[in-house]
Image (cartoon, rainbow, N blue to C red):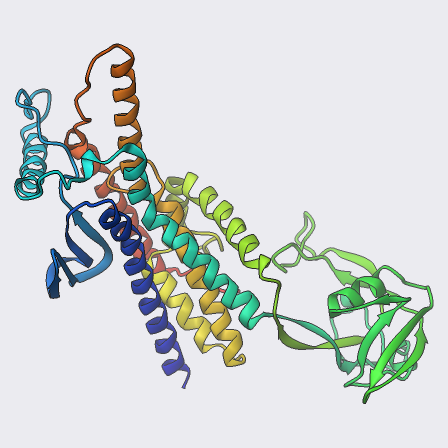
Length: 438
């Protein structure tokens, strides 16, 4: 069953990514058609065509390599100027690439008349190019909303799951009570599993975290606790005992001192353990989560070469990879499979996979905004430069030629080679040294 669950998780992620890519391209397609640009193809994947169907002037289909998608717009670039010299100051290899790009672009201009991309106003070109990343951003917010508000976050509720019978300091690293251990305050007060905490020290509690915060900061101080038992409220008193607790960071990992020993802090202890449940969060949480992911992904992208190197070095040396290491599709699929295979309620696993897909859509959003061709951000930069060039020409009473972006094909080639190389490194790292969930 574990293997089947793993495969289901991988399949769900693959389908989710395919839908994300399809919606990304729809984000380009819809404004392009709205602005009157002739769109020849809408394809998911690259390479040989597996299936396609022409609807109107556009061919829709799937290609063999599901590594992305594209739409083919007429006149993506302006016609090459008559005095263009593609071979000047370039190697023959790059000159051929530039000429091939110009020839391919010229084919779309023959029957397109004025329904071409390069003739659109700058702001419309930017809307078309940003449509894809924005679609991923919207999808991320929707997925986070379903995961966090529709399903909820695993958290402790105010219902008591169990009551400790004694106080055992965390530093003693044992579970069984001994005759010398003091009785836990909650047990001494008569609190039972199934009781629901209503308020502590006059403060209503909505989550177990609220209750725990009051108890932990009140060692040695008597607290009045209102509980609900079988629909009837009653009040009990207990005094949290001072005990030590391991210090953890924001990811729940133990903090250690210079010698590697765990660090401890003194807190109040009552001996209550909460029932876990999926607690729906406010809708605004989806926007907060998306914003946090954007910041995290942007930081990773800004250090991408270093992080790729670290992933390769950790794989070669056998060191575990950083939790925030970039991943390939293989790594994301493996993580989805592991989430699906863990021993947890189905809804909890669905919630985590949806959150993973939301995070991947944030990554697609940020990645495509990198201002380099062939990424969407590169096309935005070309459109902006074209607008600035025309504005400067008008200021001088002249007419500027459209920016000939085919000259940037060599740069595009280098970027693609680097991306393929980095993807290959991550592909191998995700196979031989995957990022661990815990």
